[in-house]
Amino acid sequence: MGIAMISSLLAVALLWAPPPDPSIAARKAYSNCLNQFVKTTSEKKMAPAEFDTLIDTACPDKAASFRTIMVTADVKRGISRKTAEQGVEDELADFRSSAKETYRLYFEPAAGQP
Image 1 (cartoon, rainbow, N blue to C red):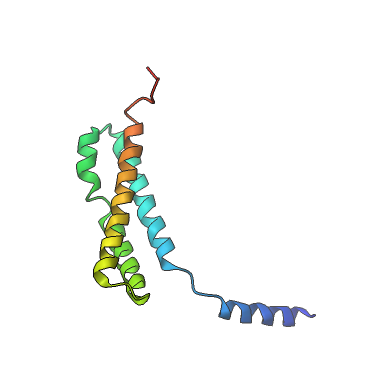
Image 2: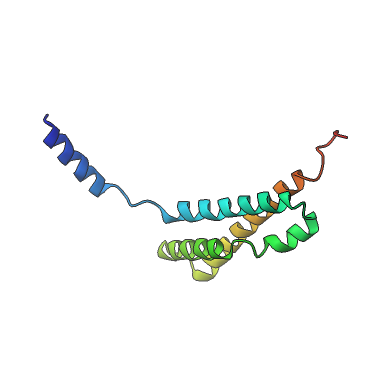
C-alpha cells in the first residue's frame, strides 16, 4: 500500500468517526473552574461557611454551558426536558458538594491527626 492509499483510508475513517461528545468538554471546563475556585479561596483562607455560600454562584458561565449541553443532549435522546433539567441540576450539585469536601480538607486535619 502506498502512502496515498493510507492517507485516503485515514481520511475516510475520520469522516466516519463520531463527532466528539461536547458534554465531556463542558463537564471538564466546569470541574476545572470549580477546582480553580477552591484553590483561590483556600489561598485567601476563607472560612468554610463563607466558601459554602460562594460556591453556589461560582463559575456561572461554565455551569450554564454545561446545563445547556446536557439538557439538549438528553432531550435529543428522548428524555423529558423536566427530567433532563433535574438531572443536570443534580450533577451540578454533586460537583459543588465535592468542591466543598475538597475545600474542607485544607482546614480540617484528617482523623487521628493533631
